[in-house]
Length: 556
Ligand code: ATP
Ligand code: MG
Image (cartoon, rainbow, N blue to C red; front, side):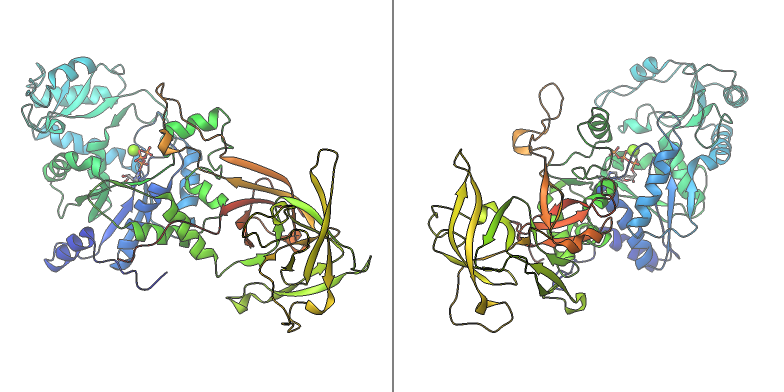
């Protein structure tokens, strides 16, 4: 990354610096706490890299903890995909993999402790009644008629909840805080509910499940997390977080710090919407290259390094804003540029016949793999009488300032010879089918020829030797200017989000390209070999990103 781009110390680092200086924190411990109910997306990548980065920076520890306290939506499939994504991003959690559900006994004991302190009670009000009693932003709530049950009665009733003697929804355990608090989260929040549900990890061991606001601080405290970093929507929950760790008398309790979520323009991140796109077959699974799940970005050809750079450039802030998708593209371009081989691939082929080139002759042209990176070496590619070139590189009637092929004009065939266009053939509908040219043998690339110059250079592949394959071009799935959602809540999809080109011709060397390998197709962009649809000797290329961008990095 550009060394001039130096980010100043963010507000989280400032808090941690202070905690260390004042002796509150010895070893910094952070965590990433996903709920295993879907695939991770670019926003989660920010959270992962932020938490991991802080632990790394301070010589601390980073935990991956599955927040699997809600059995209704969670699945083992998601646990595996999340682990794979976190590892791919390079956030090494070593052996520090935890499951919140393993702390159910600790949470149960914590609830008993609160009951014994007179700080929790079993409530028989229905969910609707609890809502009515809660009050509003402008009106205080009302105490439940069950609020003053004795400690003994609460202990007995809570035990019955745990023993399966209570039906789902008929009783809950609530914290006894303050029904008149200006913060609604403090109005006796529910901390345990009855749910006779199978848990993906704990089986049928439990029929009561803790609520997030009660469970999360206990999870953090149990693991000795020092700084519990979450997104802004939890800011109003912080007083409850602090109440839980204080009343449970944890020594050196964790501190919750909120930062703004990462939002990207023109993308869909909501699990609910992605699920719909997957179920309706609009996209090819959770890793469709048009999505911004981490799995999709990986499939598209993004690298962990490019995502790290992107997240760093976004910075950490307290104010919500959205980041231009073009910045993500800038990061991957920057990452791939020095690393990839530059190869010739023709996406919209038309034949070019060089009439004065001997039939049956093949010359091997020596080409640098990447002029900016000699370490990538060179390769040889075949040149012959019949080539494919891009259809747009020929015009029978040239437009102004058109320097490519048109009758009478001479151009350079990249890494080969100068050719002069002599005309074209057309079908009965007037469409050009073949372009004709003659070459000048003196002009071979590398020969030092400089007797005359040409203005245009075009790429090509040898028709006889080229590999025919599929390339896929992408645009954003949605266009924000038109509104991401329609009035009925459906998604306003961009009909051009996917273009499949089945007769793309590439250099023969690409036959051996491996899944996830990326190349620069000169003039056409960076392409990555699709791991799902490619076959041995028959790669399918996904365009990661085009070569040009309107995006300019502002130097901070
Ligand atoms: P979604 O809203 O997409 O379903 P979520 O927040 O419910 O995501 P979790 O599994 O609960 O998903 O999130 C795990 C962690 O990732 C949380 O700490 C959450 O704050 C953080 N996170 C989620 N979305 C973003 C985002 N857009 N930017 C930064 N962090 C995020
Ligand atoms: Mg969540």
